[in-house]
Image (cartoon, rainbow over all chains, first blue to last red; front, side):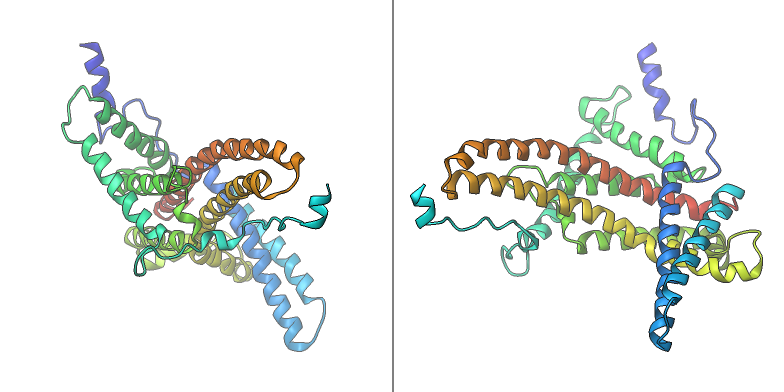
Length: 85
Length: 259
């Protein structure tokens, strides 16, 4: 009888036998991918905007400034999304 | 020695993108197309067999099928999605099986081509994933609510939002399917290229090259090919798992209430 009972346990679909309560936020591995994506996106987006300004107005330095602003902004975004809340 | 000097063997050309441009088998049908269909058939047949005679005490095939389903349900969907995870388990299980079988085609003799090493295939799959998590998010929060949780960082001044919202919009809505597909494509492409390089290199050393030393050393190239085949098997399973885990986490993120 005992093995049959044990087999029955995991087949319970709606209940959560012995399971821990669902975490209310995304777990670490996926969070890491999202954070990395945010970081790269910020750097590339503002780097591209800075590069565009440089090209359009024949200036220098906005590419670098954009890259730095993008890096800072994405780090702050990651802080707001995953550390502060 | 003089022979190598007078009649040099043609140099070894390392395999490149050409190794992936397979000629069509018939009409417009190429090997990857055939493999996609084959993967679908294999999965349907295997799950049919596994679920044919469902019993309380499972048969071996039922046990395997349930274990596979259990991995997706318990260690991917439930952890990543939260309370509403059950609705998404069939999709995630099918997705995992499909990616896994197509990846493993990369090391199965006579097929030996990972379907996802053609970038168009993972693009299509990631597009499907994008539709699923976008629809899930919009149905759960409404369009405005979905945009708010995806692009509206909480508790920051408005002028910071001007900077942060474009980043989140791009990262969460535009780039998610791109990174999802490129990760899978890159791993499968590089893995296949590595195997082709070792096997063709070994063949060149053994057959084409005029050097006794290279002929003696050629078994080591084949040995590396075999070692990396096992390594690829591992990568193929891991990448299929990551693809499904990230899909589940995207669904979980759009379903989550404010965090």
